Length: 224
Image 1 (cartoon, rainbow, N blue to C red):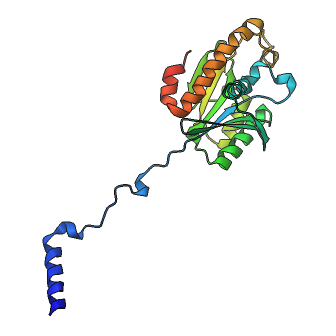
Image 2 (image 1 turned 180 degrees about the vertical axis):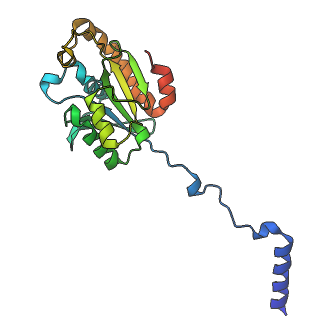
Image 3 (image 1 turned 135 degrees about the vertical axis):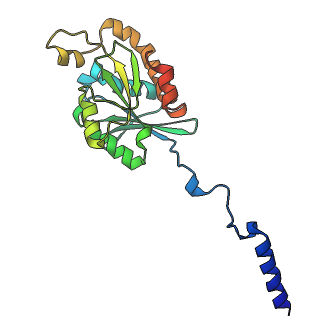
């Protein structure tokens, strides 16, 4: 008798209350949350060797070296390059200097992207640009290689052009047929004087990319 009454009560409750039949829903379902990585790979392009240290083509190395020194962090020799780790506002910045020479830069970029599980949108490639006046900044979320061997290698290895590049202008003040000598030449005296301020700005851009996001960084720094 008691069992019969309980069954009747349960049936009545179920039929009269449609909410009772709905599956329980928890607020924070994992499949509705987008995983956001707080790890960023900042790649300065350049060539290894003492003869290239102060050349225009090595501005990528120079920028990440300046950043590391400013923040008191050190590079360690690792597979396919030198790496330094910097933590800021809950983000981890991995600064990479590939040791593959410029035309094989993509190999190092892909290796460290995969090893550290860093998404493409969290990659920042720092490179020189002949089409910009000295020190001018241009940040883009995709684009062509512009004839740059390092970018060509990255495009070929990643099979995409949809990654952020931070171009630093080195101008094109060279005579016809002297492009290679100019790019692999050292900064002139006026440029050496102006470089520290430009390197400070570049350091701000790196931090902004990881904390404020790409769009805000482009708005704040492009054309400076």
